[in-house]
Image (cartoon, rainbow, N blue to C red; front, side, top):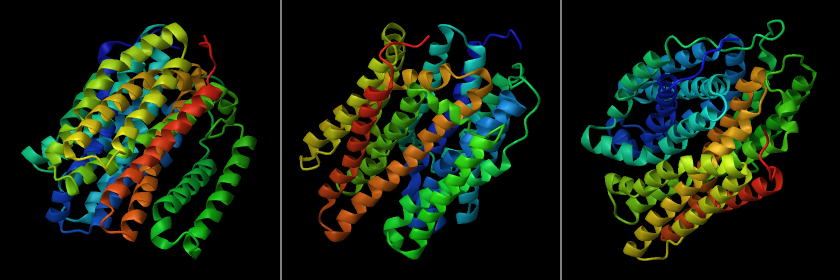
Length: 458
């Protein structure tokens, strides 16, 4: 085992890697209208291109984290950077749907490769008080990047065009590769080399894909249609087979012993639900443009309060955690997130009052995410055994990606169902769509209060 200690150069390189997914890959939402017109493709195809990145990342991230434990976390991160560059170039040069969707799939794989690997590197190379600090900055790139994506995307699309959302990723990824280059490799070296659990990979990916299709396509195809019912059956069977395989495998893809920790369960469950809350932006941004008359850039400006709040409070959550343990800042964070989104559901208000509620609500939500991020990440990864760090972080970040994907799908389904029954109910439709996130945040708070230990675990 190397005595190498992580420094700010490595940390900044990892932050850039996380940003290529959470900021640059997420900013496409701001460019949907011009992208649709420029490429001449249907809105449903564009919607698929927007959501498929989170889906691919979510279903691949556990596998990627487990593989990183075996072949090396530095190597896996560098491969992720390369994939980010390839995916971005494909999207930037797309003249139709094929390259666009293929590029977005590769961007999803890039995020799956980078996030668990960099979390495991933090676990390996940053000790004592250096670890919470590193996790804070890592979380800032993750939670903060997702929040600033709409403002960043609106500015870039307005000034340069939607293709620059992807071109700008390339120099960022190259700089990240340069900063990480030369870092000693970190991987599992205990015991004999384990074989990759290919059957576990196949059953997990197929089961999660089935579940995601049920959530995203259930309303369109009909909840009792043969296709949806078949997908539900497929999920139950495949996921059951996966659990049986993992219990019997000596070198499982997902070490189910990780879930023996109540704190780990709380971090994963609350992380999934709180990322469902982040899906509120996919309801809010189109609503304030189509119904409230804002431009894409003006709607992006509303999210500045979120960015300022999360940047200014994310290290506060770290400090509170060091003093009281993870439970208090995680509880404060989930409560504030739900409260902030509740203000955004007040769609009956006139424009000025509603925009004020949105700005204040986003600030409260951002503060909540700032309090929550580092304690949650530390709870999930900080106490994991070194040889399981990649798998532990992979499961945790899978919860992030799938939570965001399912949050968008469920909120969108609720909102669309209302508007289809009454074309004039735009305010009600948006209010209930945003209400899904309030419910998710409330359940996340309940998970934290019931599962996270009251005292910090050393």
